[in-house]
Length: 194
View 1 (cartoon, rainbow, N blue to C red):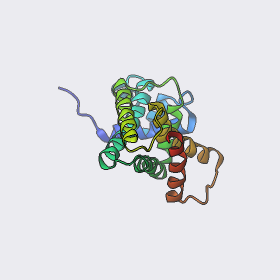
View 2 (cartoon, rainbow, N blue to C red):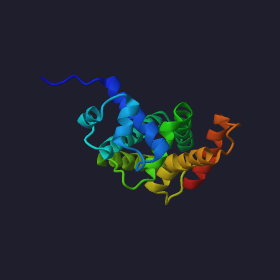
View 3 (cartoon, one colour):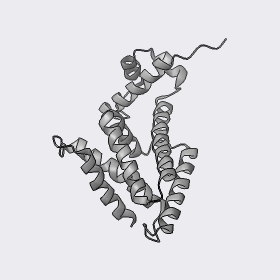
């Protein structure tokens, strides 16, 4: 008989992983520390994630999947590229304000070449990019030679790196006007694809 999975323990493992990796980096974190913070045994963690790499990749893929799902939803709601860009930047900024550990974790992993991105998510990113390019060309809101990489940088790279700079250097730590910041980064991101 299969053992029942305790979803609350799995969620505690995932949250502890995000926190510890955000604090210590990937190489500075250990399965033992993650298990201890989650309040589970290392053996329990290994039953669900055979290695730290598998756990980290699963968390990264979940994060990328939530971003791509939001972009898909925005594409379905809007034909205007600037509204799609603003919507995803708003999603990233609001997510960061709700859980700074998770955003720091995502920034770290997106810049770490030891993590793997699921091929299905890569394909989803490619398809979203092609859709955005087509929409942008149809309404004349993006330049003719814009690429999928350009869109990825505009939608994810610029806002993530902006937030990384705010966290790392404490820029504007006391004057966070999220609406104004979303508007500003949207203008910067649109410059990358216009």
